[in-house]
Length: 349
Ligand code: 5AD
Ligand code: FES
Image: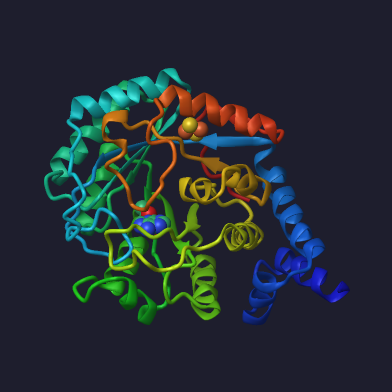
């Protein structure tokens, strides 16, 4: 018993863990140990970020995608997905709405859509930064070449999210078709870091063929990359994809991994994701209590939300941005946290 508590203390002290400790922490049925892990992670987050939760306004601006990832509802082969693109004007309207609601970070997320050329993205980013110089702009638009990333950065983009999905090449091949390259994805992440973005990687918890070994690789990868952000959430099957009948990841595993990541990398910006809120009505609150410190309410126009369905049963698709914003505030206050009206940058620790 005592020994197991020491595992948690050792992660905190060494900012590392071994393969066996990971498996133990992910499989233990000792409720006191689970609570000890969550409490340590929560205290770590509070030491650095206080009882503030950062909010990011998520704008899902296109669901066209040239990729065909087996898990994702907006993969190009999914003929059931009704495709849409937001115009620059619509995107700027989302920002206006969001700014009035207290958002100081806008996350532009979309599939890998060739319609949005580097020029169009740069134009959009610089216009948002011109209108809202006190806001951060985060891009989450997949793999591009270094030149493009440099151009976006020059245009004013502050942060970039690109989940690595899995740090194990063989596992990566089971989640993606042949034409997608693990090497290129890893190269993109290295370049984003070099260019100077606050960079986010991440993975799904309980994705098909994930093992303790691949998860161990994911955690070691995070230790090496030292990303400013890490996005993790449960895998949730989407019925029109090749993985439509696979098992979903669990809330419990997601919470434990959130805590472990917080202890490995204390100052990381770590969202309690929409996917976590989808598999459990209190998922996001429990995520914060397990050491997460960011939430990302949706700012997309209600008319398109239903169409940005990476997975089934996604929450908040019928709610206006303002409803989500205040719902989130109430949810965070219910567990003793305040939503912060600021950019919510990474704090070096
Ligand atoms: N379940 C959970 N998360 C998913 N993502 C894509 N499809 C699913 C799914 N079925 C995640 C991927 C991607 C991010 C934008 O959403 O990790 O990087
Ligand atoms: Fe969207 Fe609660 S956060 S309705």
